Image (tube, rainbow, N blue to C red; front, top):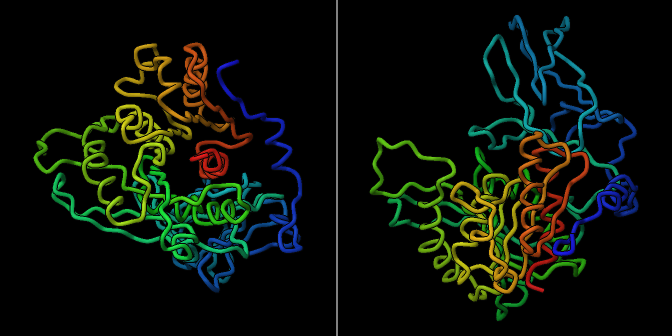
Length: 382
């Protein structure tokens, strides 16, 4: 494995289970049932128990059957007061989407915030992680996340992006900053990284600890349909041609014009999770004049057809790019895990230098991607 850097799973696991302190309090340790941090203000349920099981309650006095699906369905029991309740098995730390089913109809939980995932707005619950605070809000200087809209001539519609500006953007008005373009996954949108991903906290904490170069992060909507596209042709999820055209011809120039960016490819990175990882590898490798750093979390490979040969990955890439980063969760679906690990092994056999990381005990989920960003961002622009 002389051409790659493999992050030690044993070291990562030790870091996860160790108990750290933040502000004098143990992080992620519950001593009593506690309302989830994803609840709406004033809502007591769902609650997280010390063993990380969750208690859900739903007021539906006229319902005949109620269940909650968080990883798997849990039938709920109706009390005399018409409130339905269930306690789940212990849940894996991190963020989980979930939905209620009331008499056969799927509905969001009125007690919690809503999150866009799987193509619709659903409920979500955050399960605390013992000893880990890198994605929690701390008393450090905070950056700003802006909602930016721009008219796209290529698509004929207004596009929306979220943009993270580091604290130094306001405090150092003459300074220019490198840029990371960060993609979401399939079924999600530009809100994902700033909400489910807790990007603002991760970047604020890294920058405050001087572990990361202050940077701008652009979170684009990862889909595009050109205005002249044939409406009868069904879009191919893995055909990124339209989105690539928008990124190159509109997105990068727009944000270079609106913000104080460093506009050379050595100060511009592209990365994404799941489908966004494939987009990042494809667009990044197609445009070495724009991007000098590439990452993929739970999804990476170069289109078309994700070929993994010397034509797609020549050794000259070692001189052309500063970093290739690949990550995967150890508990992801078997085929997905095997595919990403095989890419790592293929790059190794081709002599392509890269960093490969496996997130221990996590699946295709936001905790895998938070850990990956926390590791990836400090490597950039050094």
